[in-house]
Every structure is written in C-alpha cells, then in structure tokens.
Image 1 (cartoon, rainbow, N blue to C red):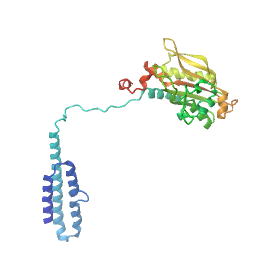
Image 2 (cartoon, rainbow, N blue to C red):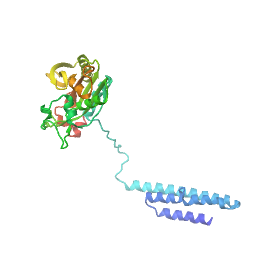
Image 3 (cartoon, helix red, strand yellow):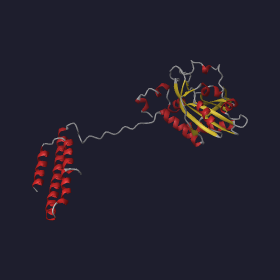
Length: 323
C-alpha cells in the first residue's frame, strides 16, 4: 500500500512539470501503457496471499482511476493553453476547400475519341516512342529516298534509332504479333522537327486506327469515319472524302470537315497497301483492311475554339482552368 501511495505522489509531481503534449503522452505510456508501471502491479496480484488480494486490488484500481483522470485533465489543460496562445486561428472563418485537378484538354480529347472507337469494337493499344527505321518507314512502304527519312524531318538518335513520327509503328507491331481479324486504335505522342508556331509543334499527339480481316472494304472505312465524326461533332457536321496519296494505303483519301468558313483537312485514311501486309507476314490476297490517322491537337482546337497550339504545352493554369 505504501508503494501505491508513493506512485500516486510520483505521478502528481511529474504532471505538474509537464508542458509539452508529446512529453505528456510518453509519461502516460510509462504509467498507463500495457507494459507500464500500473500494469506490472496488476500482474503481481496473483503472487499475494488470498487475504491481501482483494484489498490490494481495490487500492490498485483506485490508483488507476486517479491516474487516468489526472492525465485526462492535464491533456485538456495543455490543449486550452495552446488555443489561447494561437491568436492567428479564428474558428469563425470558413474552411479552406481542397482544389481538385482536372484532365488536360489533350487527355480529355484522346479519351473522348477512344471511347467512340471502343464502342465501335476497336481496342486501344500502346507502343514505344523510340523506334527503328523498319517500323517507322520500311514496313510502311516508305522508300529510302522519301523526304520524311531525311534528318531534317525526323529526330534520329546516335545509336541509329529515331523518335517515331507517327503511331502507325504500333499498327505494324500489332500485325506482327497477332493474326486477323484486327481492330485497333493507337493514341500517343509523335515527334517531327517542325518549327514552333501557332499551328505546328515538334511534339504532338496522334491516333492511328487499323481494321483488318478477310473482307474489309472502303465502304466500311467511310461508314466508320462517318459515325466517328458525327458522334464527335454532331449530326450536322459536313464532311468530304478527297483523293490523296499515302505510301502505306491505296486508294487513299483525306477527310475534310466544313465549319462554315471553308473546308479543313482533319485526317488521312485509305485501304492498307498490299506491300504493308507482306512486310508483316500477312498474305495480301487473303486479307484486306483500312487505316486512318488524325492529329489530336487539331481536333481539340476545333472543339474548344483554341487558336494557338502552344497553349497546350505551356502549363499556364489560367488556360488549363478553363477545361
């Protein structure tokens, strides 16, 4: 009993000297923790004679209740002192709301376009941005003397690789690894050494599409693109298919959209050239398909009325907060 009385005085004296909440918590654990001094005393009850157990147990419970109340009162006292000293805090002021981020307009446009094609049965695939000449040019039926292979039109590395100039490279890799039927779109960044201005950038985003089976026709291509453009811009959109030339498709077209101020080229498309099928191991007489490609920035600029492509890359919050 004498030990319990001494322990109570010890707790009282130490609490009067505590002025820091962290020190108070350490002291509480020392006395009231699972391995604290009071817990150790409870373990000793079993070693006492039966006639002493009850009296000692009651006294020990009273000590525990005293300690718990003393620590609780000391905690409240320190909290009140902290509130009084912090004159900068005004509990009547409105709270500070958390600012939530938003998707970049390029990301939003890619997701919107991808969602349309997914509903048409296409699969979204990804690929590497550093490529070889085979995947970026040769497999796409682009000859050695083509201007795009010149160092002025493509970013080459010292190791002989290059930064892809179109996501068609993903189409080649997918055809090499899969057998038809195939229906994919490949969104991603591409790189071309263009001078930065209001409508050009050395880095931009493309979405290339490919559909291959044993009977895909040019009519299927027109139907898919009609559904895509009308879903994206509305049923009133006016479009036209204009003959063009691409090394990797034959016949080829450019697709234009009319915005009331004339026609604007939006994407290129065509039936996959048999030479491309040969490069990937497909039999050109047993399969046929179509491919198309579009620039994401151009569509985003049309949808949101943006006049300068450089705004997408400057990370200006005044611009990004509008979306």
